[in-house]
Amino acid sequence: MNPTHTNNPLHLHHLPTLIWHFTESNIPTFVLPNSAFGFLGALSGPALTTSPTPPHLSTLLPRLPLLILFNWALVFIFDLSNQRLPESIHEDHLNKPWRPLPTNRITADQTRRLLLATIPIVLGITYTLGVWQETCPILILTWMYNDLKGCD
Image (tube, rainbow, N blue to C red; front, side, top):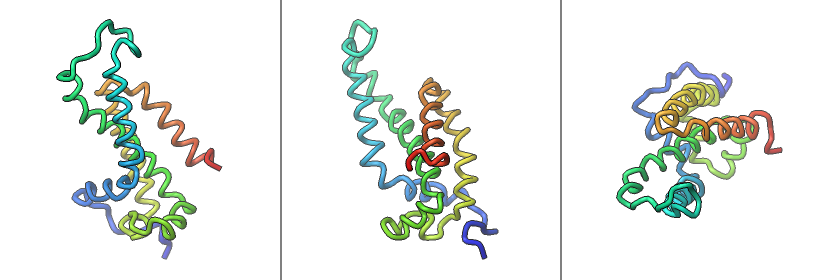
């Protein structure tokens, strides 16, 4: 049997755990630092924007979860794209055996399908947040890095 294909369906109730396992190692290295950078950049106010006054903390704090969602959603797409590749699965078997593909929680083909479903969802979320223009280049760079082997 080909390990990249299976007849076992991916159940929605497994999705939160699966998202966590795909992204957990990138939360302290990507999601939190990028979110802090965005939040602190917004606090800088007039130094980095055209606004004459800095935004009030009471305006920014309610938006912090949205900032984290933005970063987490994009790292999820990157991780799906990256971890589904054969060389990444092999590397994860050696270095990060708890990830979803080495533990057979999901197959490479299911990961590819999840990636294809996630991209329009994330584009919808970022469109709603007003940051879809920033999202599109990130998605293009993710594709170039992983699928076109720009990382080689």
